[in-house]
Length: 99
Image 1: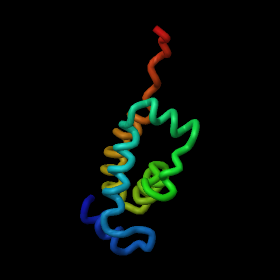
Image 2: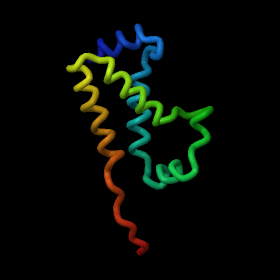
Image 3: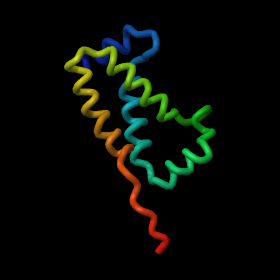
Image 4: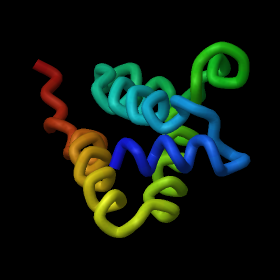
């Protein structure tokens, strides 16, 4: 899988070397942020994505694009990795308990 990703990063005009690894790290780090930060981003947006921070939605979209460009076997391996992060993202919130 890694050699195929490396080849894609060299041959596709929308990728540069290291883009897939960076997108994986960005998505992983974002889904593991505290829920209050995720809610703030949802409610107010994050203006720093435009200048300073990578946009996690763009990182996740790039991973989807790469998974479609890979061979079935490599795509399955990458989907398994991304699926673990997606499972964290899709986990239901705990019930609100005001105390």
